[in-house]
Length: 75
Image 1 (cartoon, rainbow, N blue to C red):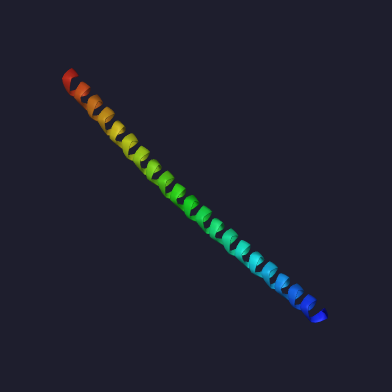
Image 2: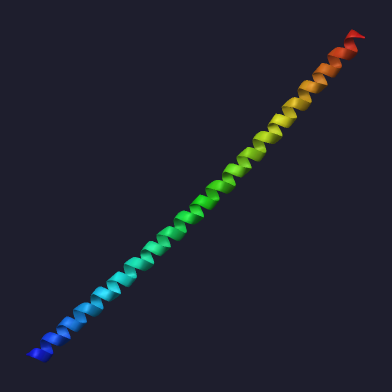
């Protein structure tokens, strides 16, 4: 009986250990996914900023051209 109880206890310990390892792996995978999502979000944010800067430059360029045209017309 003692051996049977020991085996059962050992099996339970091994199962617990396996479950803990699986949980750790799942947590690591989740963390990696979160990091990837963060990186993607940062990249998208950078793209948006670049686009906004380009639009701003384009707008400034157009305004400058309009001012130059208005100045020419006055002359």
